[in-house]
Image (tube, rainbow, N blue to C red; front, top):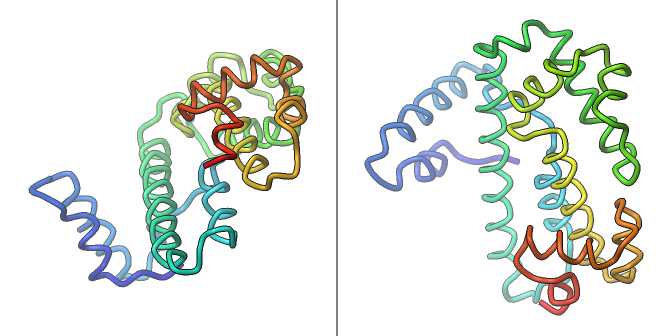
Length: 203
């Protein structure tokens, strides 16, 4: 994804926000020096945005506007994650070295590998070699969410993507992400997005 420095400046300068100004100056300097300023992994939310960018269900007349909006959404999510990662690497007292950070990343991979039947925190700690305390606090520092909060977001974003494909029934989608009870899935989806799965498909 390419974006001009001028356009980037517009994103960070909607008003007299000193924090935005400081963030822009730091990023601008990094871009000019050639150093990588933005690093991270695809979160569930970012993965869905990428998928939506490649979709063709939007009317041709509005597709350019839709894609611009999605690029900005992805960009904001990516910058937010990068900022948290930078703070984690520099300041987090519980994730002291690269090996611990790699283990935290492994936790995320475990959740994504089997979101329908995820291991318990105790099992995750044993698999990754982290103690439970460092697992909980370190994961929150790196990803800005609890382990199970991240898992819930992953499930909901996966469900949203499947609903947009319109290839599966609501019950099937719920079961595939770990909900044996369809009503529980519907309640969780509505809590996350404000609408039921069926209403979402109608939109």
